[in-house]
Amino acid sequence: MSKKNSIHPKEISGIRAFVSELEKRVENLWFLSETDAEISPFFIPLEGKGLSKEIIVAAIGKPIDSPVEEREFDDYFGRLTRVYDGANDVVRNNAERFTRLRDLLKSNLSGLRVYKIGTIRVDVLVVGIDAAGDVRGIRTFAVET
Image (cartoon, rainbow, N blue to C red; front, side, top):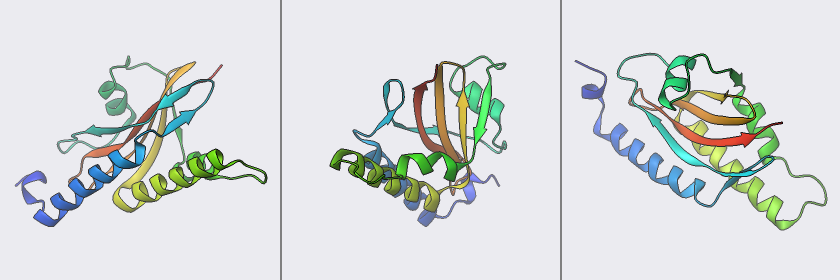
């Protein structure tokens, strides 16, 4: 019996609730770099395969030899959730939204990883494994010169 067929209905319901909440939390949330980029939900059915850099690169349609940098989940979100003294309300609000997004991802996905793929215009994927054994998370891009 495959992993998909052995998923308990409560797990399916939990995944649906997570996906719905993820869509709400990324709505009108922007990743700021040298350009501003939308953040969107991301999904790859693994179908029994393990998560790897190669699977991520292929899923976003990049050449297999694209440069890939892996980052720690907590380090990546550290700069997005930090609020410095004197920060305005917009900065505080964005940090709070990124904190809620981080917490949602942590509570619903295992093996969280951050992949930065490419150079200059870099695809950024924050992904983990859901209860069904598939890859879920968020995707955005950054301009790094």
